[in-house]
Length: 148
Image (cartoon, rainbow, N blue to C red):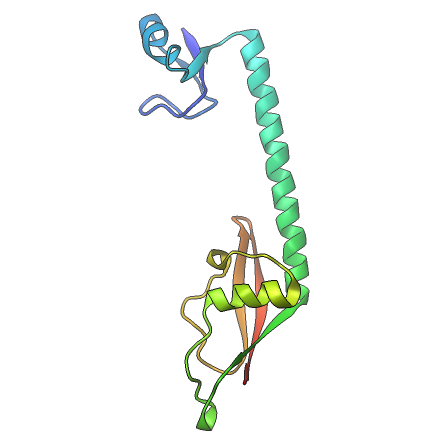
């Protein structure tokens, strides 16, 4: 019997896969636990429509990320930090502070986890911080650190 999996099943396949299993396994395990449905013309058509809708949604999310990336590229964020003699800074600028500044200055809500900052910024001047908006979209944000 061929079934279309509705969920990932360990050692059998991923969601949306069409797999061939024994009749007893399908009747006693897969169908009662709603892990899959029997392959018919109707279920194949439903699967095709569902995959098309998911792909369309993925494309919309990618387009939104690209548009947000273009907006971020054009602008920069300015942060103030205390510094002493010779330009030495007291403390550092973290990704959390950059995310808060993005919200306040540019009115953009970006999660601090999307800011790829290897280590906190400890120098005055302009630093380029990569922002991963989508697995396929990474843009550079200019962060200006000035003396308070």
